[in-house]
Image 1: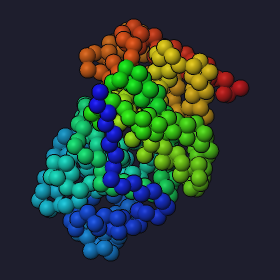
Image 2: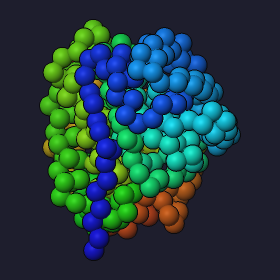
Image 3: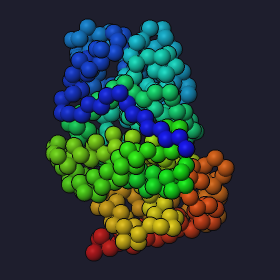
Length: 369
């Protein structure tokens, strides 16, 4: 049995580090292509350009549409080749970062990821998740290496809408439950081997950190202040979740989250919000889950503002037939739903979705009383 653990070369987190991006990028190369979407480029172009030029680096901006589809990636590759880029920097959310990974790997450049929201665990990983130009999940690639540098500025994170931090909590909550499920069956993780003890420990630390500090961090984030709770949750969402999911394994929570992109009604919702409902589903599917822990996790998700019902994802009126069809699709050969130790049949998953939805309604109502 082969065990594999992978990770970025360097992770830097601290208030003000974005203003020093040139200092951190300088050892990697001189010609720096910066990939970002329209909104992020408007917010941070001046800061990034000034810092790069201060350290005698060539600033090559690449503004993409905001969607990580193969067409946009192709444009980025063409730009990087034409400009002889030595370093590719992805600035923004998960899609900007995943696009930058694909561009850097294609041209064999150094890779820097700079999340401006802590909404998912893309910044540390070696994976690119592909979507269609309309935002539908299409698949992923696992590259041969992780980012050379991950640069996280907590002040930038808390200046963004708090919803994105909650989304990262939803994504991060899945890490431990999926890691544990995959390890029970000794499933091969995305890193290419069975989980090491290090990966499992980090996945558990991610979960424990979020449960302990998540509510406080959300309150502080709404006030746009950086506190120890915020710092811990940002690290959990970004580093601990990234290392845990990639080197320990994924399962039904992410299958649900990715699959929900096929519903037009779910398009306004983030990856982490959809995965959060997947967490509730996995807790209703897992044969060994502690009932009290299940309730605690649902109550926590309610407290931090994550969706725990189908209605909260725009699917309140979904028919039983459509839901069963969805469950069948999530149980097709090759789906990560099969990373559970027990066999997951379509009716098992369908039943778990219904159970999660009903429990979510109950816990949401209880929180209002």
